[in-house]
Length: 214
Image (cartoon, rainbow, N blue to C red; front, side):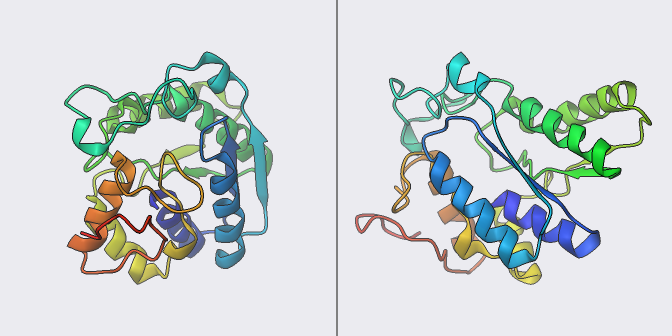
């Protein structure tokens, strides 16, 4: 959902290209489909799809290791949850920055969000400030900037912004565990449902029949 709104912003403001990284996550096929359909709807023609084998081999996350159960939202405490994929966004950003150099692009958009998130350490502003210093030091011209337009927004604000931009929420997928109908109980589903309810909007993706919309 956040990535889709971020993509809509990028399309509005520049000639956008899009990157998708599959990394052995449970909903890999569904997320790949969402990427393709969102790009089609937004008119993004230049696309890069890659597969990262390292993250699933490393494991340590419920998203990449079938032996670790996806927790329901109410069972997640104040610690970083088991759905955190260790240092995942660094892998994504490295691919995007490399391609940005080839495209001679000067910005890399990422839909990271600190508020109303699951507490992932690679979604904090300090992380992106530090990563921008790495990009500045480690690229040919040092001019590529990672931008995080949603990082200080709440999820309901993101939904509202997406509706204003015409972001194709019906094509997005947020569920951590299922690819047919969203489970409605994982942290990602609960945060999403709450955001749509607070924004006074209806979430257009299908949920299991047992899920009560907030």
